[in-house]
Image (cartoon, rainbow, N blue to C red):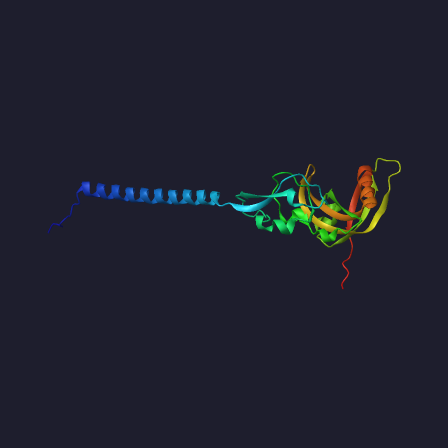
Length: 213
């Protein structure tokens, strides 16, 4: 007995293959369109944020004319202050240098109540190993140790200040690599002493023990 063989026309097979390619192509095209639309929509998502309208130095009190509201697309993970917070920022002090167009972040300002009459805020840029390993935070208190350059004949290390409040501390990039910028509350003469110490050599910030109340 001979087996009965069923033949499928080759044209029919070719048509099915063509149909599957078309379906796959349509699916890929729809996916590409959806992805592109999502990227465009994400790029168009803009938020009202605060940016600096003029240059402000660390320690200076921020006024309403120092800031403006802008609408921009902020990358994910970048902290910023919403434009609606303008009134809450005015009256605080700059914790870092501000320049026109700079995005204002939570670390850009410090409460003005931490800068009573007779005091100034001074920022110092240091390597982490000279600032308690970069672990300083607002409210900490530090001692300032000054060391003159070792190539000077009168090279020495002295305790310059014994109790200085930290207003803020943030990571920063310097010409020498990673570092921190620490904002200190000082009297004017103390700020001058620190500036002279840095010009003559280097300073270290030593974290003082936190007193439990």
